[in-house]
Length: 391
Image (tube, rainbow, N blue to C red; front, top):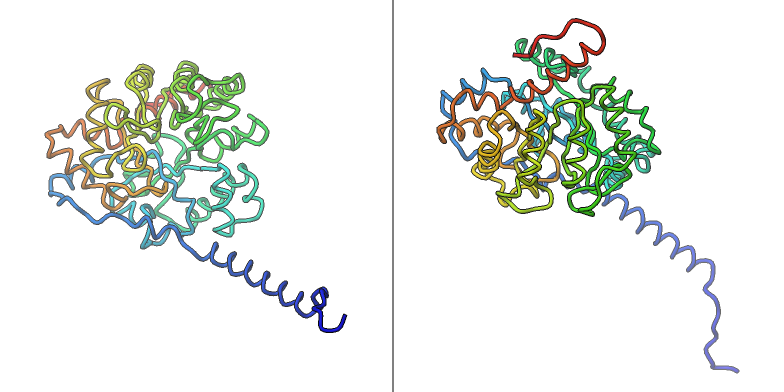
């Protein structure tokens, strides 16, 4: 009838406008996703402790090794000193760090990170591609930086330190990175400078249980085969993130001294991410070392006093020969110190009356002992002369 509204479908022009608007909105959202830099939330902490001449001399004379940094997850070129984050080559030099572990994380959330950072599309979906790409990027930076090398033995670390060269090495954060449980990929990791592998990361997986998961889940049959192949290749066991049962199972199976690359202790700060006293004793009983974190979930407050409180508890339990640095720099944390500020930790140790011998052990000699023992056993197994300890 005349005068009544007509229900006509929209014409082609309004439909085109809506499609264009939706496309523009999607493009704007994608641009915002790529452009926003979360690293600005993790600026380096300002220095809080004045470092004495004695502490600086001790720190410079020591071999300093940190067991965990997630620096490859960010966009920065490690050859350049950055405004944000915690690690780059200039700051490693400024902090007197002789060897730095660069972790290789690959869980699904790292896929989002890969897309955000505009890594190759394969890395958006494949954990193995993420690990490989991070190794490729670091190798390219090392080739372009004469004062930095990838190290594969404890003796190389000591030689590099004597020459003023920074050593880098890798750790794999979760064996879920191996595609379809292909344990033969471990050989490629070992060949490319990986020192240690953690069976689990932030979730239970086909190899075992993580600390916040099923407490009854131990090392699985595939996890046991993982340890066997790691033993053959000389890859150290990293118990970081593992639930207690998985940790105990794995420590019993490893052929080499185990490590925990970055953690705290439950007795100081109760959290699933931290180790129980029994876990600490199990690692120490096999001659291993425990890297104490500088922030994140492991600590109630990211300050030097709490870092030392975790160290002191471990020392009371098992002695200072089993304590090391495991900062977790660049791992979405706010740390007590960044790489350049590490001498503050040495100063704080001296102020607590710790001996210089103890401080040297914690700063790096304990890690070199474990690494050297791995090298010695591998050399004996291969029929060569045993390597001298990296003293």
